[in-house]
Length: 91
Image 1 (spheres, rainbow, N blue to C red):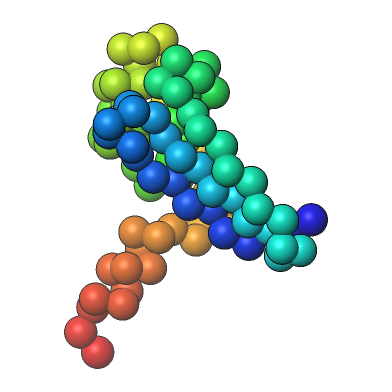
Image 2: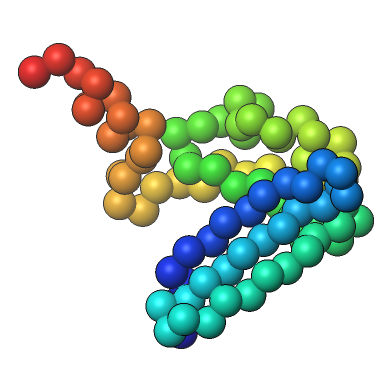
C-alpha cells in the first residue's frame, strides 16, 4: 500500500483536525483528531539541516508543551529552501 494523498483540515467549530488519507489502491481513511490526541501524537518537530532549531516555525510552541525540536543534517543536500532560491535566481 502506498500513500496517494494526505489532507488535513481544521474544523474550528469542533476544535478538531480532520485527516484524510488516500492510498493508490483506492482505500480512504478519515480520522478525526482532538487537541488532546494531537498533543500526544506529535511531540516532535523535525526540519531540514539548513534551519537551526531556534529558527524553526512552531519550535517555541512545541518546546513549551514538553516536546522536542530537531534540525537533522542532509544526506543528499536536497533542500527545499535552496531549490526555491535557484528557481528565483535570474538566468
